[in-house]
Length: 411
Image (tube, rainbow, N blue to C red):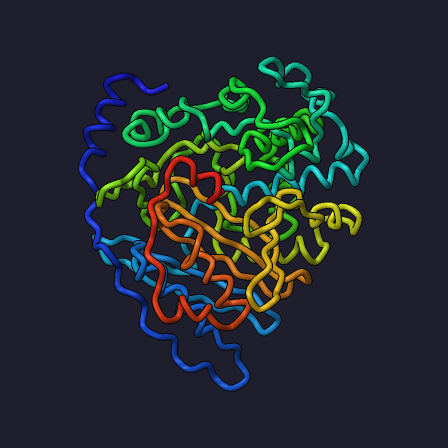
């Protein structure tokens, strides 16, 4: 825990908002594609739309059988007017969940656990009281958010410590997985196990703890051994308690998830990722995340049985369905894409690809106050449908501030 004086200094230093323009300049229109090449004009238009909607900057990368493409709009640093690039490292937030789910499914394939094992079987006594019965909660329910376990992000304690000015007082705190879980299960279940759906970050903190219990290693070490190294993801890390990002990286601009935020934007680039852990710790690049999801969907990480389990989705009441640590979207053109989104302080990421893993998109916004309606969704529409919805093409949607309740929607 930081000293009181140090926390006070952080608040004082952070009290001055980062200087940023209301809308960063959009990148120039994409040049005509050479003969035989793929056009990503609609994807570039969606990138421009994000900056026109008030985001500081955004960068995207794609992977297809014809090669890779990257595009950007706006700035990585609005003061220095440094542009976003495909080489940028960023906090990918809840995309970490797809790594955690993959490791757990690998362990199932190896016979070291079953998806229908109870939480109590692997973590006895960790979730108890307040109406919880961990003997009735399964690993599968953790991974598809049907456990009913309350989300630690949706608690007064989280809001007090990590939103608003509390972020600057607590961002260098170190939290253990048990402490984060306790923050959520202090509050009773949202519903009986298997009787509803609600996105809960607590589920995946518990998933990381199960990996450690079964293997004897932290979840991050297992993810590195089983996923990062085999796929050659050289720019992907699990920083643990290291608050810094590897270079190059954008400034992470945040409005700190306060209700009715004003125009002030703060630098939230640094914080200790133990606040997120197995639910949102990973740092990566667009290229690495495209390779990860491509390898996953092509069966390079999981046997067919486990991959089918992962991609079996449940209804959420949202515009997507949810599998085991993976989101499935049905786009306006009929395309079905699989991946995950992630939002943490100063960073909003989307990643998705076709079922065969041959066409992938990852993009990152270095701001966190855009809601998930267009123009965020326009990135997927532009890349996989080749055109933006007519309304979006006519007039970009206005950005909406992210409220505490909307954090769960954004993941």
